[in-house]
Length: 604
Image (cartoon, rainbow, N blue to C red; front, side):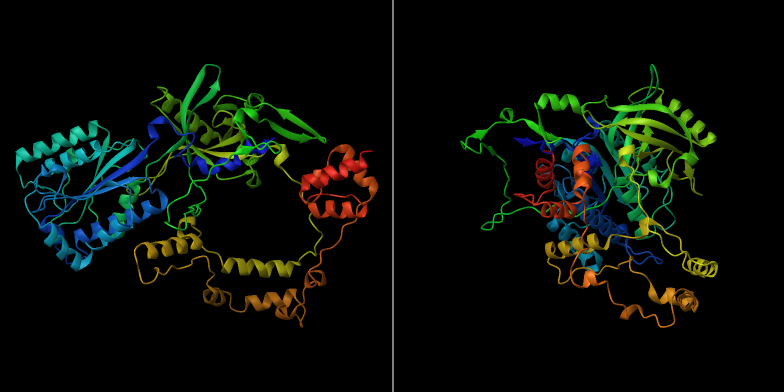
């Protein structure tokens, strides 16, 4: 008989699926993302600026490589293509477009493609590009038409289609009005099919004027939170990478729900994840003879007859009070369903009632969806403004998908923030803080410890003040993940050694000692005795001998736990000692088996 947990899955176990790529995603965002790099290969792209260290072409290739490697790590199912225009040679499907060179078709990124891009970097790469493609006439309209064919040739379902143009020329056709008109027309056709066109313009002598031509080609921002057309060109490589990263990272909602404010008043909102723990990808099992991936299949067989069992032949069971409760799958479905997906407003609370220890896990972000229900943005903005002015949070019941357990959410308002350049750095919306149930809160028996004196507390305050620094989570990369992917990259690209990483989590001992000076020694003198030696301190004898302190429990206490059905609150070592103490024979070492054995012995 199947275990209950084999069918009933906790919401916490489903957190990995909340990224928005698999379960709970709206139909408009299902499928694969696609990105086409359309790069200018004219002679101007290979000219190095006096103040610049890299040519515009080299900056572009380094940026393309960065996106390729990040896609391999984060979303290897996405499709990426690399197309050059303004070339002397032509290479494209059916060779129907002159001066357009398709270097990479729309396909998933791989190690081979990264190596191809590496071959186009630096001075040697410029020579390879000149020999392979050359620089010729420019017809951006035909290049856009070629990119349109790349999209139409893909049989897979695409969720987001984006095209990025890299160039340092603000007038690619040098005043040819006919070719300008053709390019604008084709750009309009691409935008009508759902392709988002972005411009990544680079520095040129005299400045880059987007109003001459490209302002009519690029797509407007999809929403207020998205970065629009930047008027200033990119001068540094980091600026270009940052701008590309902001464009190619598409926001994905894990759910689109109705926020019910009362009877007959619904506001459509999208639920987004702002932070999710990054993990290593799961290893893939390969057949040792040919390295082909192997597939794992699970089959259930009858323990006595050995016959194959179908899903309809199994039931679900849960042990409760020493009795096995058996249910059909339909009955489990009914038990799991509490409410339809959505957010229901319960009330409002002052912000000071929300405590730090109420945060169970990473919050979600709530943003209005005007497309689903007209007027949602206006109502949402009014609610957000009112909550912010009164310094209150909204308490809601949140059900993400059907059959998922409902949770309490505290909707904390966040007003829009702009930087000096009027670019948005914080979007307006609510942060959904997951609140605990009464069952989730645990009481801790804190041990009684000596109280520090006033002089010791004052000295520690001085130390804390000296070691303070401004913490930003985006300044610290996970060293384990970075080392893992650097090694994979070195193996895939046949590098001699993996790229060195800097572990920013390691404390800077020398700088800390310099800041503290004699404060550390002064604190030791106040707290520890004169003959204190931390390195010569011996450990507890129990740990030296590998022994654990034995916990005795009386028979009356055990019988009380059996009667109240609270044996599960005892730890496994205590249960094992109790079995030995009262001569209870057990066939296994699992907690439930120990509980069943003790219950059978003491319930009589």
